[in-house]
Amino acid sequence: PVPKVVRQGAGAALIRDEETVASLVDAVRQAVSIPLTVKTRSGWNQSKINVVEVARVVEDAGADAITIHPRTAKQGFSGSADWPLIAKVKQAVSIPVIGNGDVTRPEDVEEMRKLTQCDGVMIGRGAMGNPWIFKQAKQLAGGQYTASPSVHERLEVMRRHLALYEESLHGRRSLAGFRSRIMWYTKGLRGSARLRASLSDCHHLEEMIKLCEDFFSSLDIGLSQND
Image (cartoon, rainbow, N blue to C red; front, side, top):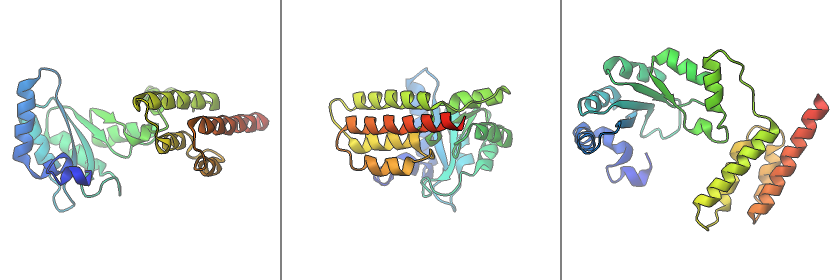
């Protein structure tokens, strides 16, 4: 639902035009033999909730599955995802339905599946800074204990993520991008507000990494003392 996209009639704006959705899905279906999936929102706004109709159009046009993020285009990421809408879509079509929206904890995966009877769950923003959520959700579904990552594991995964992000920039630098990713991994941890303030004064990635190492080291020492 990015404004510059929907102004062109693309992205989330397509949900207002079911005929165009049908023609697009049909064209792709004719062009490829691999599985074809569609992801859509609940509607354009609260007065135009037409996701069930769109899901039927998508199925008829040849899609193999559909993912539902039950917020309107106008909502963006505000408000709450309307999970019961996913259940309505599940009842209306025979292709697999994947639920999405407000899945931020491992427990949310099973809660969504039970409430909506969806065939799968897509995790988006809930994985930002918490890639362990996928493993934890699988463990929880299997009745296993879900352990939180250790301080050391959190630091090592964050380092790897920053390295991959730097590689993706192809020589460019985005301190704001590095800063945001660091904050994903430290959100909610003791002292993260002070770390955020310190990071804003950094002008080099190496400085940021050193601050993070010191931050996680202090957490580790605190945990050892508590033990």
